[in-house]
Image 1 (cartoon, rainbow, N blue to C red):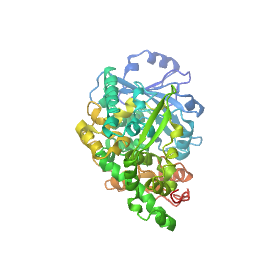
Image 2 (cartoon, rainbow, N blue to C red):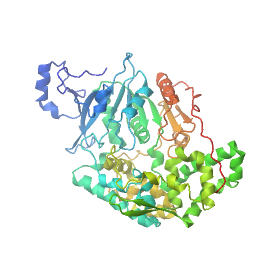
Image 3 (spheres, rainbow, N blue to C red):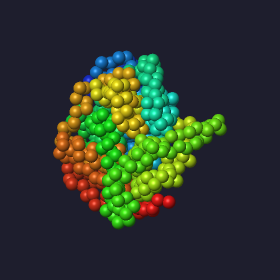
Image 4 (cartoon, rainbow, N blue to C red):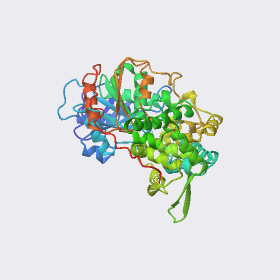
Length: 517
């Protein structure tokens, strides 16, 4: 059962079992609002929605109050917005779906299209979503806006991590101080950044489940949120019936040395060329050495980088440098949009024809003032670095990794945790491979170098009831009808084999095979 909000709009408070629970009248609610129980943690209050989008979609909104440090309360608390969407034709006894947002740190509470897609995915089931601790609608919000200007993850293609210089060490120096500055800012504000991790978030979610009076939940994670959902299973196995891992990014692989993970992801590029060669004889003629084509293009750009000039806000000009590492980093991000043209792009680069690179590097989209409006970037760093636990690298580790493979600068962010400040407060077993009988469905996009099926192959060793599917031609966060169809079928019977015959409903684009100009 889900508790009802109060009729007069006053906050209604729910306490954990062990507290006195009464059927409350309006008068008793008023008395409760003035009682000491209002300061008790954890508690859940019926409140105004955090965003207008939640109002427009008829969400029932709450605020959850919990300890910043659940294991050793430190006097700090967190407040999280929670939204419950009830289906129009609810069936009794239906298990609610709890959504675990990704990013890490991306708030979807004001993104109508995103929320409507989630509602389509879960069908006639209750959906519970929220901003996790540290997000932009939570208190405290872990804000570090200055980090947006240098972030390899949020500034994307034009970040200094890729374009500031042809010297990888100079590019590293543009980023590392901002990571330390963010850590110092948050700790100076009295925030215990070690507590903003998947372990603590899992406890928050389980307390919310109990306060909403749900016996169990189905967990639905998006990207890094799938890693959080997996942690939820690890720490609260009795609370979860089934899980959906959407385009998952699990800490069990994410926290490996970045060079290891980069080269695993890089294999996706060659897999694309292999498909082209199998589909089109002309592709083999264009790239007879297709197994070497990625590295030869990189070597060409290392020897003769692509240099572009862009305009800053004040009208001054700035030069951006794109070497071989920048090419691989950009391809990692752009593969879903670029895969059909990749064979011709590689052939052009090797021939010294850079005419396609202006569009490939999205120079017309250059933004002199980058920002990440839906992210609390302090949370992003805290989550990524805290979840590493004592596997966090030292500066010497990350410098050596960059010297060995400069492309990790624009790749996934764990390498920068060397400058974060301290390890996260997580159990020693936090990064252990999962071992669970929980049924799960993992969804991947074929053109997603980040989070391909290797993630599922890895965790399947300890999850015998895991099914996974790869959607043809799609990238990260694939959106198609098949996605919602399979999620609905899985949630109806998590132990049954899901029909994945629709996985190729999105056709591959036609290969662009043109000789060098």
